[in-house]
Length: 132
Image (cartoon, rainbow, N blue to C red):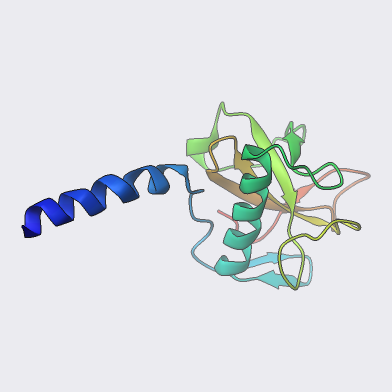
């Protein structure tokens, strides 16, 4: 009885685990003077991945990140199509001003890095401290 119940639960939950975005960083990430907790980054990642997978774009986000700057990303993201989504204080990006900071992820929701316009050249990015 216990085995069959455990198998049933595992069978039901497995697709959910596969569809969920991969967790973000394990420590705080600093972009300029802003500090984001791992939970904050993961929340932005989940919101961006949800919008991408449901084709519900908000003011153009998420959108493809081509990494012209050759920023370091998680090795598991190498060769994948990358997307960026705003990382803002106070909750998931609500639309409007996207601010300077972005979480980067793959089309399968895998966390890649966090980057910022703060301290970068015109319309370019630099990595945030603690992102990898």
